[in-house]
Length: 195
Image: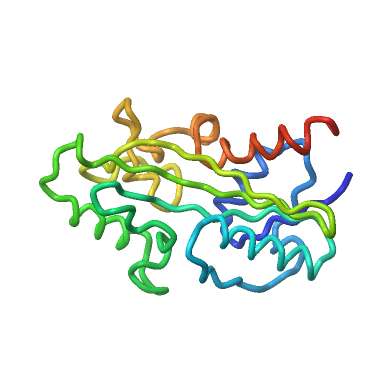
């Protein structure tokens, strides 16, 4: 079975993507002994995902999947967006980032706390394929962190039912995540014929 390199060092993402694409042989950067961090310096999720996939595919000469995703809060004009992981600087913790967002929205009613998680998944196969798929999950920013199953901003991203992503188990989260939506589009286009 063909190996596909997953261009991320984020172990939460590795676990999620391997679960969703369980019929493929997905190899993380760590498993491929690739020790590097690719700077996400582009203006959009799509460009960042493609930059990472193209680079790793080029140095390994293998198919590669890369993603870039982030939180876009409507009342803050899409902030933090493409800078979701870095808007407080490289050394800030996720807890600090989440508290910063909660403080920014203090006192704002739920109807105006709408937000979306956007994930762009790039799939690159040397000299053959280079395509990006997008998934979007709509929700709200919670009033406080809730739940402890997840990573990133899962504990403050609230669904229509009032639960945050961090209050779902992995299976439930993988059923609805923006990453799953994007990966299913990729799978339907390129992988279903092979399975």
